[in-house]
Image (cartoon, rainbow, N blue to C red; front, side, top):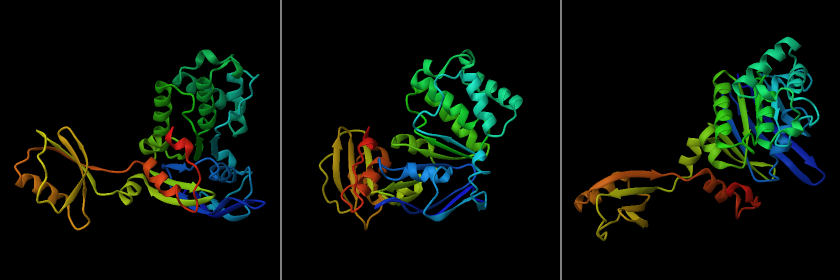
Length: 311
């Protein structure tokens, strides 16, 4: 049974179609990338999933039942990109308070907060106020308050913002652990390299519409261009008598070739073997998600600038 099913969801503001007939499913234990440029509709979609907004049309199913914003919201952990913490409140007290709002008793909430604070080396922060924290420190606190009630669905909007590499890896490891324990995670970001590393399934939105849906591996295979990198022991000689590929790049001891549609990689290897060339490496070059998304978004009727994808 899927944790989440979004069925033909729509949300309009006057003449703007913020979310326009979007559907997808989220399996237990999966890490799902929700991607798109600014204004694509991601935030509106998330706010409908969390019960903040009501859809104009369509349906949300949570654990096989129609989503109930009152009772199901306690089973969701939502970490927005904007900080949602009380600046004047002490950190330990605030974490316990937010946990109680998610249905934990004070005893359980205090125990879990202490466990997470130890894990994230935050014990000395207990009596500090949020306003005294750096951006990275407050990001760690917000992550803890999002997940410590062990929600079935976790939504993380730019969770690595402001974190140094060490703390980013710490949170990344916890994301993997939460997924392995059965939590389903929606990961929203502009950083494509993080998506390729962390997510197993993605959708791309632009101007309210879903324009791509699939596994990371499947999407990259779908948009590959038959490009291969070939390494040689010595500088390859001038290529003659070739009908299987075109050379599209050249470096020292390396060629990048594009195999023609009616040929296979073995035809390329055979060509160089026939010329007595010693091959040291042969690797397919798959497009990055960043390249795929720019190709899909730019120059189409759905086109919108993708400024932050290339940061």
